[in-house]
Length: 196
Image 1 (cartoon, one colour):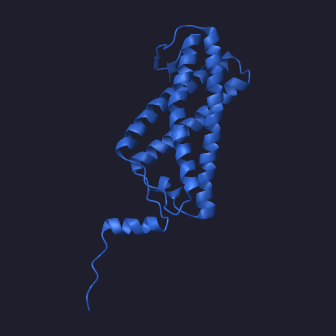
Image 2: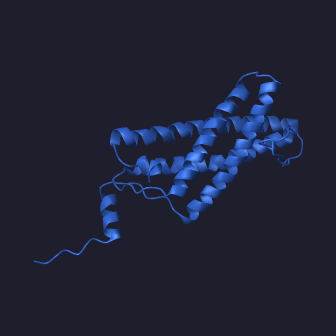
């Protein structure tokens, strides 16, 4: 009786993907994701608090510095994350996932990437035009990147707040979709970002 040759890695990978078992992200990609998530989920409530409540300068000034510092860090991390992804593409989604879900996932991911780059820059421009100091975790001051113009600063802060709302909406969609895949569809779409 003839023995079957063992299936090669490519064949096994194709079988897993055929049944919708998504491959996992690398440890580096997962670290980028969860560090970004922690920073953004810290920065958003701080931004909402200082934009909504009159907390007084003793509270607001440190919160502004923390908010701006996290924003600068998110900008750097997102650029590094996109550079890494350029050379290390994300694993494909399950082939049995509907086409509209593929499109929605791509739109959400790339929308968040774009916003996490543009939003800190808009905030930096608005702060520069207002001529408020931008202390990076009290270590050093970031230079202004726009001439002083209070009216322009006010307009840019409106844009900054609107983009913050859009980021919050996309995050809710992203989290909701991940939980739907994990608890309803019971596939590995969420698990691949948790354990690889």
